[in-house]
Amino acid sequence: MAKSPKAVFLCNDCGNTFSKWQGQCEGCGAWNSLKEFKEPKGVKNQNGQVSLKGYAGAKEAVQKLSHVTLEELPRLSTKNSEFDRVLGGGIVPGSVILLAGTPGAGKSTLTLQTLCELSHNTKAIYFSGEESLSQIAMRATRLKLATEYLDIAAEIDVLAVLTMISELRVKLVVIDSLQSMYHPDAQGAPGGVTQLRECAHALTQYAKQNGVAMIVICHTTKDGGVAGPRVVEHIADVMMHLIVMEGTRFRELRAQKNRFGSINELGILAMMPDNGYLKAVTDPSAIFLNRTRKPHSGSMVAALWEGSRSMLVELQSLVVDGSQGNPRRLAVGLDQNRLNMLVAILMRHGNIAIFDQELYVNLVGGLKVSDPSTDLPLILSMVSSFQNRIIPQDWLAFGEVGLSGEIRAVPSGLERIRQAAQQGFRHCICPKANAPKNPPKGFIVYRVETLVEALDALACLD
Image 1 (spheres, rainbow, N blue to C red):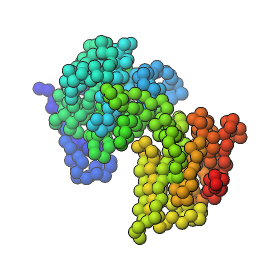
Image 2 (cartoon, one colour):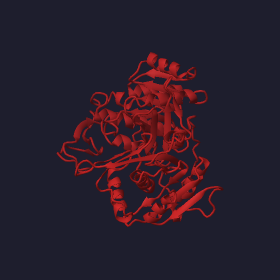
Image 3 (cartoon, rainbow, N blue to C red):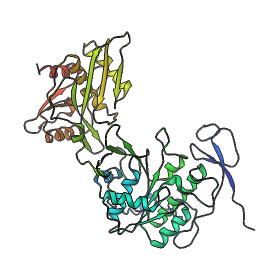
Image 4 (cartoon, rainbow, N blue to C red):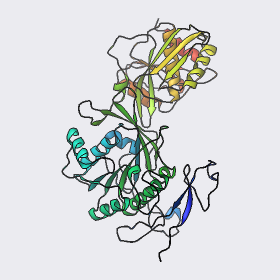
């Protein structure tokens, strides 16, 4: 008689397993998070062998780290420059990429575009557990994609999915979505804790053992995290989020985890209004700047640094007389607590009393950042609105402001200035430590060490 599956208890929050139930997880301290599940049978590889020795494949002999052979895996370009940027240069064979996002963000559209582009030279297949094949065909037709080389299937049994991949010798797979998959040897309905864990385990193990790259679409919770146990994110190589920029047709693509590249990169995609195609935005500064209109007070351009490139964005401030004893302060796209800190610094070290003024600040374009280099341009925009002083459109600023009123240096100052010069800017207020010795031709740099010096540089506009 076959041996029955072993029952263990899994923590829904951290993924730790225990031999018996207990009220509190010893790993993360969460209460009532342990759920019972039974270990499923092993998954067979291409050779028909069952292996549960680890996600990376067969067991290796012990050796010195210095003796490990370094093999440069050729990356597979997605034909989308922003997607490649966030991935670290392309898709690595054998990697598992989780792509999460809110409903309607464009996850299925982005992956379908990618597979249609790559299926000409790479054997690829798209598995759908939520849409019918006719729905996928209708989307591909609307997006005007080349579909003659791409295989698709409507399947939610993860073992059947792996069998198809093995028979077709596929090298690139999209699973849409993980929450719709189920493992026949695991308990629970699709989307449950046990099912998500075992499906993710089976897909990851197969990908590692056979060099198959997988893009797995995931649902998100109301808090923005991946639905299901945390262990799903731990075993994947890349964890990406496709975020809708509120009120716009643009999307942010960010990596929360990336074993093959930086997690600081930001990709910008634009959803075309006619057919919904997601197009890479190669010059993000163009969507955050509007230099055609007449300049007005309260506006200042900031030079952000995201990953490996500079982005120029417009900061707007509105300072008005407060009608109540406790004036309101509102920040959109910026940290509210940091705004309050900068107001206190401006009053103490800039001698500008705005404690009784209502203050509203906005990062144009729907972008959300926490870059401290926005401190200086944000303060200058507030002063511009308070004093009704117009800052010309060819001015920009960057720099972190300390509690004692000093202007601190930020990374990649020279690259920010070069990018601004290419965009037609001619004046920059920046930390003295970031000021280049030989600025671009026709470019004026105001080197400042304190907030008072920065305000004096702004006063030269009078």
